[in-house]
Length: 301
Ligand SMILES: *Cc1c(COP(=O)(O)O)cnc(C)c1O
Image (cartoon, rainbow, N blue to C red):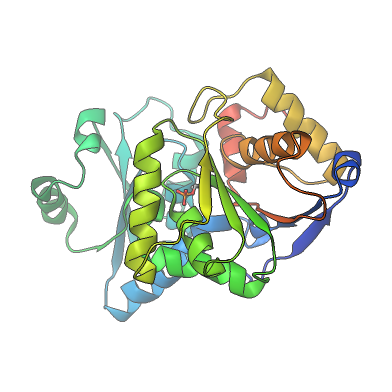
């Protein structure tokens, strides 16, 4: 396996809607960074892997669900960097492992299944000590991979392209990617995160905290949109599936079912509603996540 390849391409998207509304839309193709270590998951892992190596760690330990893009990317990245990996998985061991879990095991990740209750309290010192006793010392990555080094990796997306965009759009889970883009833009433009999970106030607060810790002060030129959840995390309906298919036909690129499809659906709704003035230059971030399709049982591909 090869290292992810930066910079990722920036692709201009063209269609009737964008020309009618006179907006310019670009897709930053972080989905093309690597077949297995895609999108923001690579950006967030990059400096953490370096730090783990520099600090002499032999093992990464992280957390996630049965279909987690972060668990998937971490397993592949650890192997690529010659590190062992442990995945603490939310919920009891299923009879049949998801494709995601099968892949992590093929990369040598050791899986530990814990109850949902235990998982909700996973950062309690006592539980972390139990993990240390069971697996030995590890470099610790939080769920979703979001920490200060992750912000640094994401901010590079802007250095790699330009801070010349009027608007930057991304999908949000933990908000780490949004925070990194805000940090990279250094006060310019407007950054819009499209949330994929319920819980509005909490997300805004954690993005503020992440930015403040990283930059030393608060940037407020960002917004989180909660209108295109499609029922919540990892939920979808017929309309979203049809949208993904149409988008693929129009632009020749595949969105993922959990994050980027909801972002692009939201972006296009805002364009429809004249949210963006004519001549606005918008960059949307394709954060990858395409392995998530295995969990939809290949409904469309
Ligand atoms: C994890 C993930 C996100 C969410 O990123 P956060 O930094 O947690 O907000 C968005 N898109 C894709 C494809 C992801 O895998």
